[in-house]
Length: 569
Image 1: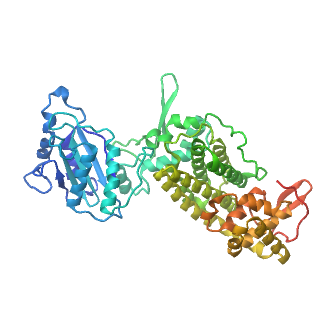
Image 2: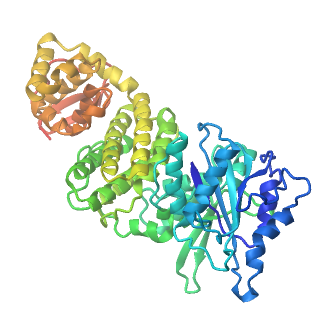
Image 3: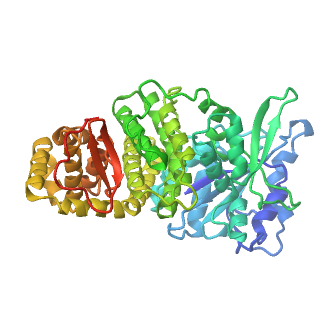
């Protein structure tokens, strides 16, 4: 159940007209009163002799009784209460009870108060009602409406439990503003998959990911096809900005603009400027593993390493440091969404869109502690695959795998802090990442699997021994998984380049989020290939020299025998 306190108005009859008329899309059916301050209040929907003016006049009587100097300018209070689509259909009597509970909880008409405000609840659809009230009590005083929206939400949580409705998570005031009903109806009429507000919020977040200054940010907004208007002071200082979709126009044919602050609390210009205070990664936080891998593949490997470092902070950092990492993780997801190829693009976009809610809470992020993740986001955007280049599925699977565990850790932290909306958003994002991973990993894991199948029996037995020695508690489960051959081939590659497979396994299993993995062997294969700086693509072989290890493209699998000593990294 979603109660929404609407903007206050000055014309009671205008609101009543809207509630009783068919609506722009004929969406209002059988409008009628379900409850009111007076059981004999006129109902223009059911009584042919009653008019909109009659109902408005009675509602306005306490206001009109005041002298002009004492009348409030905006005296019309409006609350909509909407159920979820999957909720059972409620009767008029049930909606009447809900209306009385809402006006009592918000302070419009406390229970037992005979001199409270006048109000009326109109139902013109199966799933919601509108409550209109005038903000002068019968005794001439004003109602106490402090935190009326929060009190309506709290009452809605109680009503959900009592009526067996879908139970929503309590809000904390950090969510982005929801699209209005008018915006939703307009999007439906124009066959838009999202409302302009939602599309703009997503586009602006993607444009801001990894930016370093105002010029870059506004260039990206323009490149994304948005209409951008900057608010400039007489001194020439930039005060703010607003954006519009080029095909979203009002009745006068002008673009419908939204300020950044109205799209989301963290998209105002001052909030975005906070990201640009420094462009340097924090000391010790820059990802060096994978630095020799060029282009998009290298950017993804470095992003995976940076997320691994952030994951460790979530385990042991302060709340402020953790909040900063979660904010930075949102930027990495935005960057992945904008640079992804077709196999993973839609799920990564959904993951970033949903995780946006998890990036904001009342825990203040420690200043500057998201710099490494912001740099990773910038690296991803600057190294996006060229048009027609396609996507490196192996490194994409590697970075999505790490993003999944980072988002899962964020969900656990939010849950511990009772941030219910943020925790739910992070869990939903993790599900989208899981689906994206499966699409990206299908081919590269098949290649690694086939290479593992070709290992000689002595080498396979040696990797099995390494596994049992390093992680005896997980060995039985891993050996039974279909992905074990892929992990075995990875262990063989690591051993061939001079690494200690048992030590790598011990380090890779230090994270407890393995419990949420579909395949532990898959997860360990990607972690080992990243930590050991091995080629993510199983179709590359390692040419080992005294100078180090280098990838080389070959048409067949890596040879089973060791290729000589290598330099461990």
